[in-house]
Image 1 (cartoon, rainbow, N blue to C red):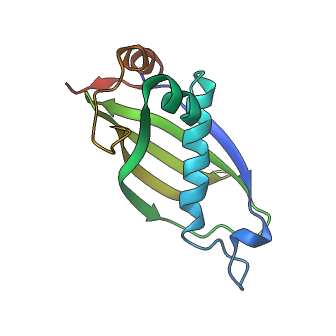
Image 2 (image 1 turned 60 degrees about the vertical axis):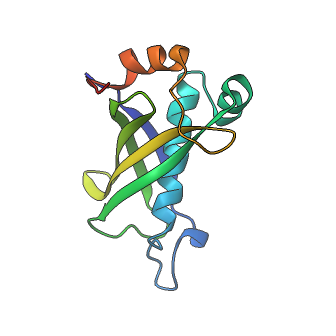
Length: 140
């Protein structure tokens, strides 16, 4: 069973267009913040991954489906979980909701890369930490 991570955001004026509707690209920012906070919950952050493992996590692809619009001053909840892990990457599903309303559904493929930007094996200590907390499917 995968573990869900939740992150709350409030929609500010800067997040919206002239009509008070969240500008579509800003959902990507909300999703990125939620993914970062999920890592922090496990005791990892991007700076630690870079310093300890000389690695970064980058987005290889993102499939995002917009269901309905969010508006100025909406309170949103982002649910994130890793669906599966490979030797060099993981796949994360994320959902943005306003109350019970599904706003956005995203499937993100994230890859570990070395300082030259080349894919690398997920460090064993991170891989072991990801397994029990994040996923129910591991693809090797």
